[in-house]
Length: 173
Image (tube, rainbow, N blue to C red; front, side, top):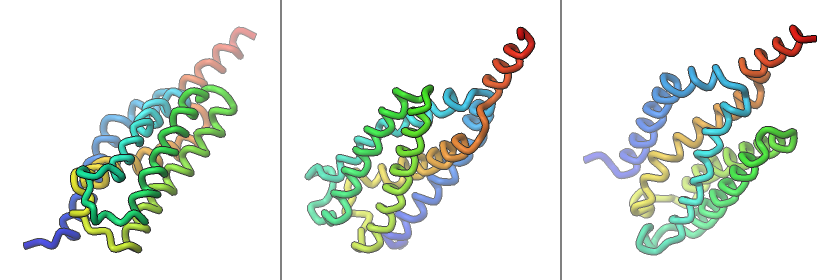
């Protein structure tokens, strides 16, 4: 029989592989055709659902043995990431929006990486997550991949839509 921790790791690995394929095959080609702000919108919108991390604090959803040293920062870190995502989304097409996207993306990435680190520190067992097991094995890999895409977009010049607009402006001048 495969140990639960190995099953947990296998689940996370398969999720990274599968989401990577989905994003590379279906999402990335579309993102490349859009302006930077338009491409960021669906990626950031996904993170608005990070309030789901509050389930780490709900008895009956998780085991009573789930270490609070892991659950509390994971839950509230996700909630803060969701609020930052909403703020970034609301201001996305402004200069403040770009700053908010950086803040959201740095916070959100650090929050997820800290949860992995803290899980190792406190000896988190997969069974302690209860139904929230699927957050960590299905959603977190997707969230980390999309954080990577947002960083990539932040470091790019604006996309094709902006190039077309600037070409039109230079022709009309």
